[in-house]
Length: 395
Image 1 (cartoon, helix red, strand yellow):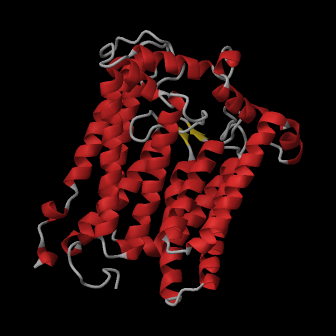
Image 2 (spheres, rainbow, N blue to C red):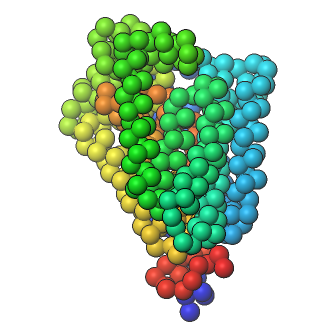
Image 3 (cartoon, helix red, strand yellow):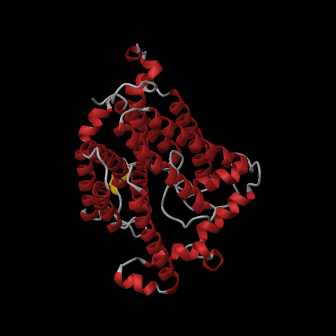
């Protein structure tokens, strides 16, 4: 009987409500952000509404494609993503200009900039989901050898897009790619006997690099070719007062804006603290100033509800491929939220990572809406089986 549920009953209304609330917060924050700055004739609010409409169209298409088709397309999309990353790297600057030291965007007249790495994140999730499910179907009897093999497969598959992204260079997106890999490693069933030594080594390496950044930066510049401006982000994070006129300018302004919002904020369009490009990465500073602790808490609460909903979906579906797709999406959203909000309040260093669904940005929003389209598809095609003990839907 579950197979004949009405289409309306299979539609994910909870996710729709959450996305609508994000849309309202995004429009209000972007309108306030651009009201106090001179952007000429460009209206970012209108453009954000347009990108949301495009995102809704992406969801409308994605929802009617089931998991089996996504599974079949996963490696093709992964290959397409690598080609796009390579193309943006080798393209002439008239098509792919350098912005803030990074070459990450295509520029199209009449449309704007498109950042391929935003879509590559979702393509990678699909590829890793297929790789993991195929490995587990092939190696039913697990061992240290099979776990090492799976870890190697996940690492190699992730290394290709990660390497191309770091060549741009785009440290923020590179960290997002690593968060996806981490999510898959933690839920793929790899034994902790393998995970603990590897992550211990990774943490130790990270601590060593952090030490070198503070004490011996010339070694990293010489041997790893790390850009100086990436060090400045660390210095300005740890000691913003001594970099107030440089790299920590945004951070100090963000702290001032959020702090001045107090409990309930100054009210809609009553911003007083100027933050350059506040409609993008520092959109949470606008929310904190205008709506205070209460408004910021509501936004964070919405993200927790979204992540909870994604976790619930991943646990209820009985298709391993769908479970891993949800895992990857959860990893991306969670990392973006913690990193973006964390950098505005000096908990984490500043990186060029937007706040999902709220910051202005066509590529980011379309990539996130495509991810949500995958979730809609999972709920739409499989909801009638969510509480069933029947075998995998992909069979």
